[in-house]
Length: 135
Image (cartoon, rainbow, N blue to C red; front, side, top):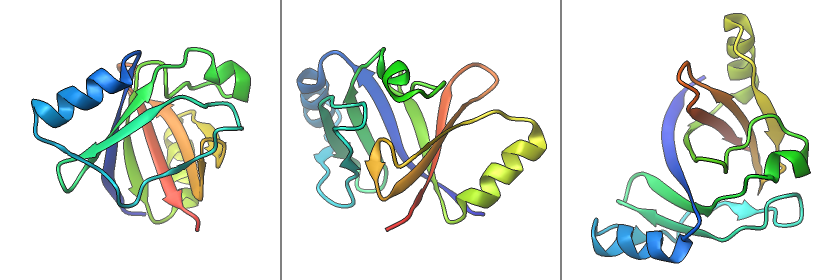
C-alpha cells in the first residue's frame, strides 16, 4: 500500500483568475496528461483548471458547498480544497484507516471515472483524498 502525492486541489469562486495566477505568477504549465475524467452528471459539474510543475498537479476547482448534499457524502472535498495521494491498493488503505479508527467518506467513482476515491480529515480538519486508478 504505497502512497504518492498526486495533486493539490484548491477550491475557488474564480477558476479563470486562479488559473491565470498560477500560470503567470508561479510559471506552472497547463496540465494535459493524466487528467481525471470528471463525472459531471453525478453531483459536481463545476469548472476545473489543471496546472502542474511537471511533477505534481494542482486542480483549481470551482467551489461547491452543496456537492456533499447532492451526492450523499459526508466529506465535501470542494468546500475548501484538499490534498490528494494516489495508492496502488485502496482496499488495504481503507483497512489501515479502519484499524486506526479514522472515519472516511467513500466516493467510489462518483466524481471521477476510473478513480476510486475516499476522503477523510486530518486532526486539524484538512481534507485528504486517497485514490486508486481502476481503469
